[in-house]
Image (cartoon, rainbow, N blue to C red; front, top):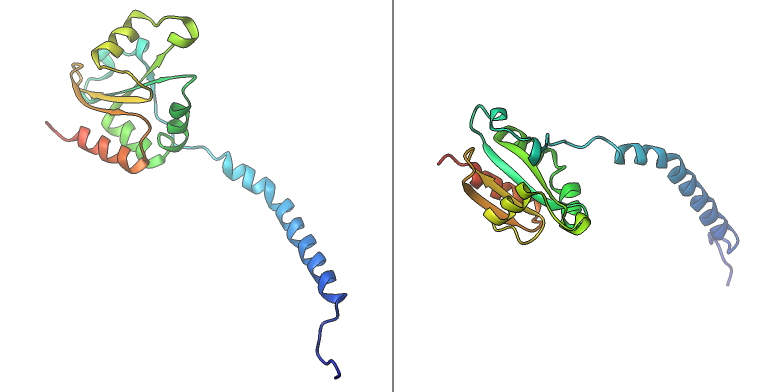
Length: 164
């Protein structure tokens, strides 16, 4: 039997090696573009440290959004990266709420400031992250404990922002 139109056993591996080299070269060329895209600025929430907040900063009597967290808290970091950096969520928080960050320092310093201890006690914060929405007068409206999905966070914020 005579072979016709068959690719030789030497040609096929040579073509695969050339194709692999071309794909590798394209990948190497695209890496700087991927890195610059990964470092693109994300939406930013104008957080106010709890110690620096004054009621005069809220003349429109917006709801306050207190984000309780800690520097050592991995779920807090995940929530910052995936949910709070989402531009739609950041925009919603920035326009509807006064965003206040409350950082627990008990693990690092052995104690918290009296203000932070009082807030954690008042709003029954027992886990991080915890988001508490309050009226401008400090009365709790809604609480979200733990790192939720982006969709759950949007629903939580939407329900909390409804007029009372």
